[in-house]
Image 1 (cartoon, rainbow, N blue to C red):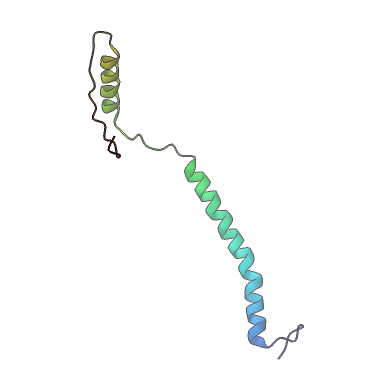
Image 2 (spheres, one colour):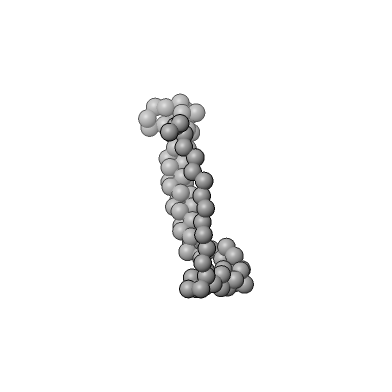
Length: 82
């Protein structure tokens, strides 16, 4: 038994699967992209709690105060012998 292209039955089945596979693969790709875009619209959860954020804000205000002073000491390491 042959088809219109004179292919053996096994080759005709493979050709038929290719015709079906491309639209199916394209549909799956579109569905995956739509799902990814839908999930990207959700805002991420906060990295720290509100209490921790408030504490960091208070520390920032304390460091920015005019009566606060600090001295930084650094050690520099040079790779050459100079």
